[in-house]
Image (cartoon, rainbow, N blue to C red; front, side, top):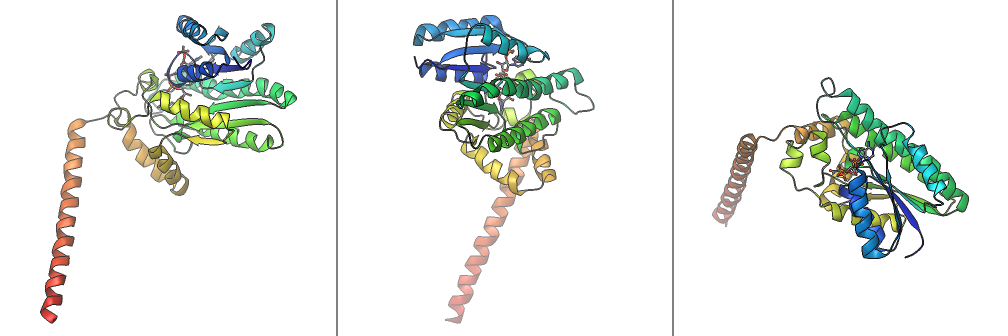
Length: 298
Ligand SMILES: NC(=O)c1ccc[n+]([C@@H]2O[C@H](COP(=O)([O-])OP(=O)(O)OC[C@H]3O[C@@H](n4cnc5c(N)ncnc54)[C@H](OP(=O)(O)O)[C@@H]3O)[C@@H](O)[C@H]2O)c1
């Protein structure tokens, strides 16, 4: 045990669950936050037994406007000092904006943005007063890319990036660090809960493993790195997003967010390979003819 405490929102599933394991392995006490109390309790029992740490379960709905206040108050009442805050909880809603569920989109803004800002404000003040502490914010590669069919979600993640980088600047002269973790599509429950499990990005791309993403984020957080883009493919995508116009990135993302049609994809790949084959054959013929012409001259 190192006597420090990490508060993790979204600890019942996906990256959040993996973060909890990593902190527990390093001897951190935990405050586990999400809605599913039983799942959190099970995780808490598992980790306290395995690592001899203390864990507190706070079952809270971060879509409720007073949830962040309640979490802060309960920590104070239980005498828990939060040394590390991981704002991981998040959700999305899939579909064209004019047709999708507004209630779920407003909850998305409340959880991904408002509660994240609220928790950051409450715990950051104490960290700055102690001149010590660390915060990890869950962004996404979509923080950099407009996201058709998940327009509100993409915008919440763009907010998280802007907010975090502004605070990083404000905290330059303190020992408190903020890190933003930007994963690409990963194999968690996220897509199913958003109703996006049939999309090309989920069905037809290589998804990151949650344990790898959490490990990258954890290491970046511990070393105080400002921005962690997890995975090589996502790093390349992030560089591209910084250079290309938003409309182009939005069009590419739209393609990935459309429903996956295996037949159409197969036909598209056959066409692409045929074009590549014809181009390659043309280049080889041209090179061969060039060599013949040169030997005619000699
Ligand atoms: N998976 C991806 O492809 C991906 C990529 C980039 C970024 N991210 C981000 O990574 C973070 C974690 O997502 P994940 O992939 O691990 O998804 P996940 O497996 O669905 O986990 C989401 C977590 O957020 C919690 N949560 C959702 N709504 C909540 C609410 N109203 N109140 C309290 N907790 C709530 C869930 O707990 P309960 O259901 O128990 O409340 C769960 O623990 C999110 O911020 C997400 O936007 C995900």
